Every structure is written in C-alpha cells, then in structure tokens.
Amino acid sequence: MHREEALDALVTADDITDRVRRRGRWYATWAVVYAAMSSALTLGVGFVVSDFALIALMAGWGVAIAALLIYAGRQPVTPPGFGWIHTLGIAGWGVTYSSILLIGLEYFPAQPSWWVPGALLTAVPMLIAARFVVVRSRGVV
Image 1 (cartoon, rainbow, N blue to C red):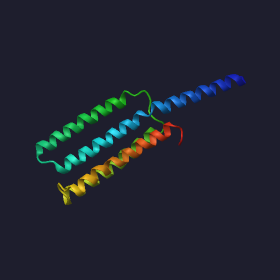
Image 2: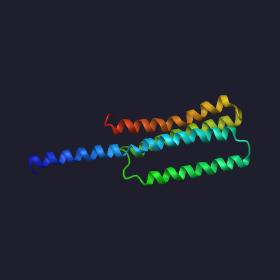
Image 3: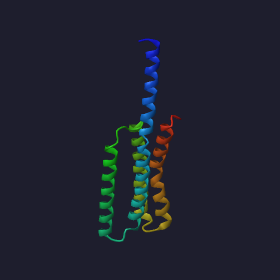
C-alpha cells in the first residue's frame, strides 16, 4: 500500500466512523421516549383506582414497549458502546423504578408528594443514557 492509498483509507475510515456515530443517535430518542413512558407508568401505578385500570395501564405499557422494540430493531446501526450504555441505563431504571414502586405502594399509596417526584426520578437513568449517546455521537467522549 502506498502513502496515498493509506491516506485515502484513513479518510474513508474517519467518514464511516462519523456516519456511524451520527446514525446511532436514534438511541437517544428511544431512551427519552422510554423515560417519558416510565414516568407515565409510575404515575399510573401510583394512582390506579381499580384492577381493570391497572390491567389497561399494563397493556398500554406492553404495546408501547413493543413499538419501541420494533423501532430499535429497524435501525441499521447501534451507537458506539451501545451494549454497556443500554445495560447501565436499564439497570439503573430497574433499581429506581422498583424502589419507587415498592416503597410507594407500601408507605405512600396515592400520595402525590411521593409519586410525582418518584415518576420524574424513574426517567433519570434513561435520560442520562440519552445524553451520553448524544455527546458520544459528536465525538466528544
């Protein structure tokens, strides 16, 4: 390989890297939507008035998750570091969500002073994941 060919290959590799980083930004949108859904679900569970309402809420959650999974499955690339970013985001969400639900259902049923901040708190792990993907897609990290 000559010097010019090597330089062309490096430029091509940089272009591909930039395109992959940009195209991986879809996950930030996915994570923000998931965060919003989580907040809505938490509020719904906190203020549910009947078993039927809870079943309807969980069915809606299932449909929304299915839509997010279909959207994610149709993306041509994943962001760099996707595996650990997504794992940490979902793990953080799981701990936060389950803590808010377990404590809230036992000690603060239907109390807005618990459920509203708790709902917002469940969004934080996925919002952090979204922000991290956006920053990485710009090549900053």
